[in-house]
Amino acid sequence: MPTAPVNSASSQLSEHRRQVAINGVTITPVAFADPPLLNTVGVHEPYALRAIVQVHTDAGISGLGETYGDAGHIARLRLAAEAVVGVDPFNINALRARIARALATDTIEGGHGMSGMVTGSSTSDRVLSPFDVAALDIQGKLLCVPVSDLLGGAVRDSVDFSGYLFYKWAGHPGRPDDGWGAALDPEGIVEQARRMVDGYGFTALKLKAGVFAPDREADAVEALRAEFPDLPLRIDPNGAWSVDTSVRIGRRLEGVLEYLEDPTPGIEGMAAVRRQVDLPLATNMCVVSFADLPPAISAGAIDVVLSDHHFWGGLRRSQHLGGIAETFGLGLSMHSNSHLGISLAAMVHLASATPNLDYACDTHWPWKDPDEDVVAAGVLEIVDGAVAVPTAPGLGVELDEGRLESLHRQYLDSGLRERDDTGYMRRFEPAFDPTSPRW
Ligand SMILES: O=C([O-])C(=O)C[C@H](O)[C@@H](O)C(=O)[O-]
Ligand SMILES: [Mg+2]
Image 1 (cartoon, protein in one colour):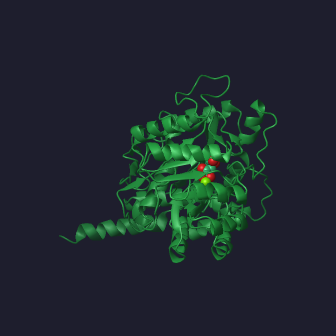
Image 2 (tube, rainbow, N blue to C red; image 1 turned 30 degrees about the vertical axis):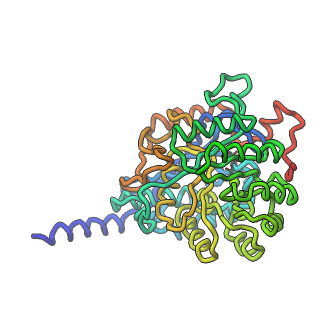
Image 3 (cartoon, rainbow, N blue to C red; image 1 turned 30 degrees about the horizontal axis):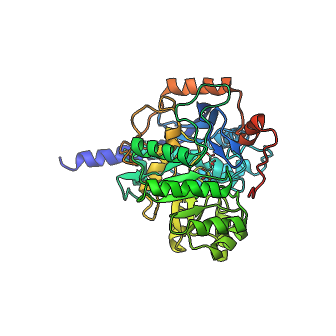
C-alpha cells in the first residue's frame, strides 16, 4: 500500500513529538592548548576554556552546545540546567523564558569569558545560547534533518571564513615554541598570512590589532595588500584607538580595507570616526545586544554588525539579528573567540541559512591543535577557505567521550578558571596597561 509507510512514519514522528522532554543536562568544562596570541588587553594564556553542554531527553537523544568556560558563566549555566528540565526541546521560547527566570535573581559575579572586550552583552542571551544550539541539535536528530534546514534552509553549501592573523610570541614563556613562530612586525604578519592562505585557502584576511603603535599596524596592512593584492582585508584594534587616531589611520587605509572593525570604543566615538572616514565601520563591541541597535543605527555609528551566536542568544536570535541588519541596510559578518568543533558546526549552520551574510566569517580554528577537540576529527575542515555545511541530522557532529574526558582533565590540571589575558601579560610586563584608548 503506497500510503501506509508515510502514515506510519508520520504517526511515529508525532509520537516522538508528544513524548519528548529534557530530562537532564551535563555541563563539562574543558581546556585546550592556545598559542600566545596578542591583543589589546594582553595575551592568550596557554589554555583556552570552554564549556560543553549536553542536553538529554527522555527520547534517548541528546543535543550538544558549546560556550565560554569561565567559572561565573559555568555557575549560571548550572542554574539554567536545572530550570530547563521538563521543557520540550522544540519549544525554544519556553527554554528562553525558564532561563531568564532562573537568572533573574542571580548574584553570581564575573565570568563573561570575553576578556573585558564584550562585557555589555545580555547575560540571559549568553546563557541561553548553548541550550538553543543543543535543542536544535535534538530537533534535527529527531526529524532526521540538518540544523540548517530548521533555520530555513541552507542558501550555500559551504561557508567562507577569513584567515585570522595575530601578532604573537614564538611560544609561551618557559615552554617550547608552538611551530607558528613569532609575528611582531609586518614581515612576521605577512609570513603568517602566507601560511594561512597556503594551508587553508583563505580568501579574506583579518588582522587583530591594538597591540603596537597604530602606524606600525597600518604598515602591516599595507604589506598584506602588497603580498595579496586581491584579498579583502580587515583590521580590528578592539577599540584601542582614540577618535583622532582612528580617523588618521582610517584615512590612510581608505581603499585598502573592506572594513575597519571597532577602531575606537563606544557608539559616539564610532559615529564620530564614521563621519570623517570613507570606510565601512564594523563592530562586535559597541553593538553586542538588541538594546544597542537603535542608538547605534540612529547615530550612524556602524555599517556592519558582527553576529556571534554565543552572545546573541543562539542561532534563532542570531537570525533575528540578521533580519534587523537587512531591514536597516547594515552589512552582516560573524565574530569568533577561541572555540572547538561544536561551535564551528553551529556557526556554519547559522551562516549557511543567513542569506544576507555579506562577509567571510571570523574563526580562531587554525590556532587550535587539530588533535584537541571534543568531536571526531575530520568532519569539519577548512578547504579553499570554506567549511562544507554538515548534512547529517542535527549539527552533524558527534561527541567523542574519550576526547571530552581528556580535555576535561586538562581543564582540571590547568588550574585556569577565568580567561585573564591582562593578568597573564602582567606576569611578563608588570606595567602593562590595557586602558583604552591606548593610542
Ligand atoms: O573580533 C574580536 O573582537 C575578537 O575576536 C575578540 C577576541 O577575544 C580576540 O581579540 C582574541 O582572541 O584575542
Ligand atoms: Mg572584533
